[in-house]
Length: 378
Image 1 (spheres, one colour):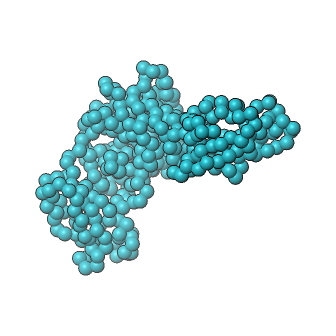
Image 2 (cartoon, rainbow, N blue to C red):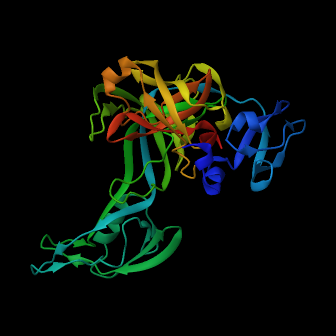
Image 3 (cartoon, one colour):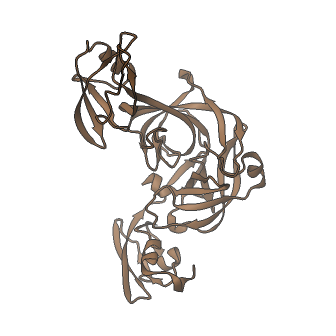
């Protein structure tokens, strides 16, 4: 879209809310952000650590918004691209659905309908804390037909609920709920810092049934092996097909957080998941054009050419910060572009780590989204 055709709201949307500038350097926002018609103070003398509020305007006349400028030291991390196995346990027992039960007399009942909701986390049963399915089942088996009192977490609010168990034709009691207490999968490690803290995926892991981000109590990181690659085609995403090595000696770290912007935790000492040390590149340093992504293939991590085609400096969806297109003939031949399991693949531009792969376009697997690395580190 031509600059003259942009509305004021569109101009505001292209201006980031926060910009990170390296301590000690003199930086011109005009050159860094390069948004047509938008002007800023000519220079920012970053002589002191802290935050600066910088006004920007339309042609120096009409105020648009204020940008918060944060001064930071140069930041370095070890870039990865290694495929890893993820195992996480939920914070409580997750209810994914309710269902019908045939009772002892052959009648259909649905005791949990309109009482619990998919996405509820069961924290307590009859006053006893539960975190695993087997604990929940044991409490139901011991209820002797009495109402089962639940304490659930529903979108951050703790709610007491009561369910009447149904005696089945098998002479056991059921509540008519489908539950889950863990999840697992394969993804890509993005970076590891000097202290062994890692970031991976660039987005969170959601429950496959409810679509909600999983509230996890913790988890473990394992070695994973890719046995085949299913190429992506139009309308059908491909995937890295492999398995997680769950042996104790294959455990390589712990997972502490599952968030909208990635999986985070701690690598065990001595684990080699990243070797190349690179500087972090901030959003105003990202530009349209050539870049590279790192991906593990046939046991080793390789760099593949991509293009950054569009950048969203003020995007509210923090893990869709820019669009990418795979251009490397070798990667296109192997995968068809971006496939499931590549989430977290590091993206380098001008020798700096600027982001990670997060999503693929279902209708065109050569295209997808990336997240700014500063969002993951934020």
